[in-house]
Amino acid sequence: MRKFSLVLLMLFTLDAYSVSSVSFGKSKRILADVYADYQKTFYCECDYSRQGKKLVPELDSCGYKVRKQQKRAQRIEWEHVVPAWYFGHQMQCWQNGGRKACKKDDAFRAMEADMHNLVPAVGEVNGDRSNYRFSEWNAKPYQYGACKVYVDFKGRKVQPPSASKGAIARTYFYMADQYNLKLSKQDKRLFDVWNRQNPPGAWECEKTKRIAEIQGNDNEFVSAMCK
Image (cartoon, rainbow, N blue to C red; front, side, top):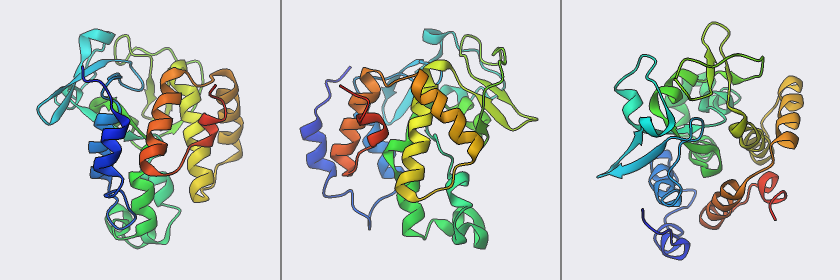
C-alpha cells in the first residue's frame, strides 16, 4: 500500500480544484489518493485495492455476500452520503430537468463534487441505498452477509452500521450548513443522537484534514471533535 503524501497530492490538485473546473469525476480521482493508506469501505469496512484505474473490493475480507448485483458488487463506487437527489431537488435546475439539467449549474456541481460528502462503498450497497433516507428501527441486517447495513426497499430507508452513524450525521450537518440545505426535524433529532454517541475516530479526523487542505474548506462538525 502506498504511503500518503499530502504535500505531493496538493501540488497536483490545488491549482486544478477551482469552481470553474470542479467535477464529481475529478473529486473521485483525488479521493482515491486521499484514501491510499486507508482502503476500507464506508459501510462494510471491506478492504479494497487499486487494480489499474479501478478500485476493487476484497469481499472476503469483510464477510460480504452479494445480494443480487454481482457485477456491481465487484467495484468500489464513491457514494454521496447526502444523495445528489437530496440537495438537487431543492434547486430550481432539478425542477427544470433533474440531475442532467443541474450539471450545468455551478452550485450543484460544487455540491456534487464536495469531497467531504463522498465515501468509498461497495457498488452494490451504493446502488441499493439509492437516495433513501437514513433511519434506525432495530432491523437485523442479513442482506449482505457480515456487512451490517440494512436496506428497506419498500420503506425507502436504510439502517447503517453503528460505525458509520456518527460520520453520516456530521456529513449531513456539514452539507446543510455549507449549502443552506433543509433538514427535517426528524433527521436533526436522529443525527444529533448519532453525532453524540459516535464521535469521530482517528481516520475520520485525518481524512477530513486532508480534504480540507485540498478542497480549501473544513468540515468543522468533525474537526471540532478531533484532538
